[in-house]
Length: 448
Image (tube, one colour):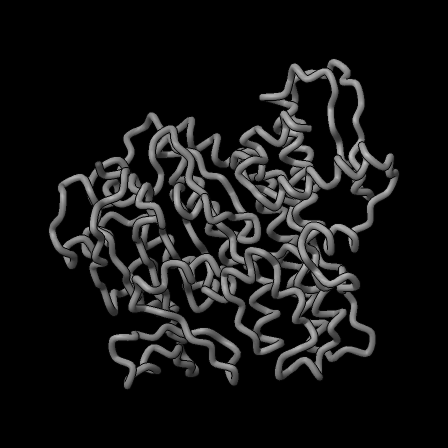
């Protein structure tokens, strides 16, 4: 137990260290055969003695992560240990057993699949992990609830089918990378090599569609701190619209892992870009990202601040934000430099066309060791058009010409608002409404 506590797999997390030590001492000192979630929430995480475990899953989340860390330890650093410690699913009491010889296989991946987490798994492994499809039913609920749940389930299933073949698409793209590639030169090369570095890994972070719908239903805004440690799950019974929603139904919705189909579809093209540049793309779900990754990794954040709260960490450096219209039930971009004219980019509707908008932000990560790309849009067709635009040399050259001159090999940090008109060929239907350079004290490691 002491050797495991001293290893880097646990020592960097005070909560995991405390949880593991409590579980082990409970079993070793008292020969306990069963440890309950309520006990751990109170003794280890400081929750009230009779708190609602259905609304607060802090114990389950950390137990799942602890199982994964233990598997990693015994697969690598602790592979010579005579005894192995396991925490069986369905119970929190650790089991100490004499270790049997096992082949060097994908044990960590299997644990991660069962736990529903993706942090640290390479893109080609994560691609086979399906998103959970919701089977929620609300007795006596409104037709809008049924439609929303059905739509969410459909999106999750569609994402599962989509991700199942991403690995093969990525591998095929890598095999063709030896062919002359326009993404290795010009404005495209300058930009994308800042995200997909050769022989390195970038995190593609899919948004949390369930979280976005939950905030719309309750009128609450979830801060990144509450999202990361799951404290927002304790406030399911509050909010202006909670009277018309069943808290149990909301809880069932919020715990499901679902993403926006438009953002999931973007992964196809991002995988192609990564493979072409001989880089790896690691697919992540927003709930599985960590502050450590936000400080050290190259990131691609998809969605709005409501569906991907990690974007909130970078909003203070941006002038283009997103605002929610509760009447139209949609988000639209605003320019904070002209607050008096805040609604001028609200999507317009008429019989012939509907204008869409998207924002792209390119800036350093929190630690200055990598770069972050943030892509948000008013809908599926808008975000899809953004990817075509980002992969077009002429479009990126136009953007580059509107930004200050920097180091020859470095694309400057920027934020841009794009206007997308339906009904015409892309990327010609995309025009730049606003483009601004973002100030930075130093370029990231990718350009040094």
